[in-house]
Image 1 (tube, protein in one colour):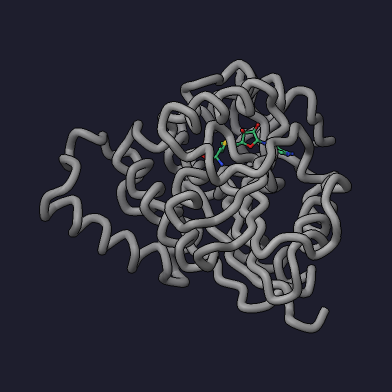
Image 2 (cartoon, rainbow, N blue to C red; image 1 turned 180 degrees about the vertical axis):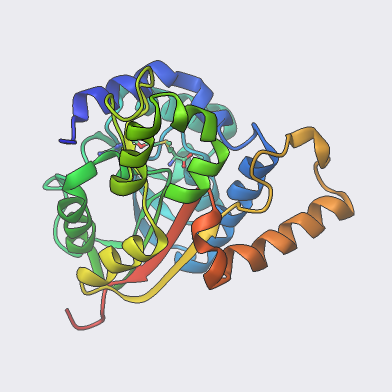
Length: 274
Ligand SMILES: C[S@@+](CC[C@H](N)C(=O)[O-])C[C@H]1O[C@@H](n2cnc3c(N)ncnc32)[C@H](O)[C@@H]1O
């Protein structure tokens, strides 16, 4: 399916402030937030200058603020950028924001080569750009300095199919087969849904990062065991929550389970020479 930036922007404009709560809906979402946060802390050194593309309302900008980073925020959606400004003001993380840009991850011409210590694209920009993913990743690689980090997360084919099996089957067996064959959720394969994106297999994400000459590539699942479990089943904090988190950390890093997450996390580095 050809990438359609206008419809992605319109989708996230409509989604509005619900985007802030996306990690609070289910147990798996809560786990996913912690796994993303831990990946961010591992990948991005304190005090880095970071380009955060597809920042949405800024949940990860808030964490980058806590890491003493300076952040340039970019997003396709004008509504998400406005919400970012609002949440940053209300929650006190605006001081880390150098600038906000409405732009597409496929076109980072606004930024000089090697001008960031890290590029973060969490929550699927590399999924929304469909066939433009090589282009998008090449832009991320260009603007990060040699030795700098690239941290992405994308929708995962099998984990998402598991979580939303009924929706995947809505169009009938042929579209469901097409989703699994191509990884693409489109108007044809997912009738009635306006959430169109490419869902990756773990091996596919790894191959994409490696094809761009990135090194130290790490791919993990992001929330796998708790898929479909209501948030209320495990209260926030307490020993059961900590036990779930520890099980998820192990499961999400285990090669045999990588494809079971609703999302995939990819961490990589631009080589020091190159
Ligand atoms: C699922 S939200 C994730 C927001 C935030 N990063 C998070 O993880 O909570 C995806 C965000 O990426 C933005 N986005 C999608 N495709 C993009 C693209 N091609 N370029 C820039 N931003 C994009 C959307 O507008 C939206 O704000």
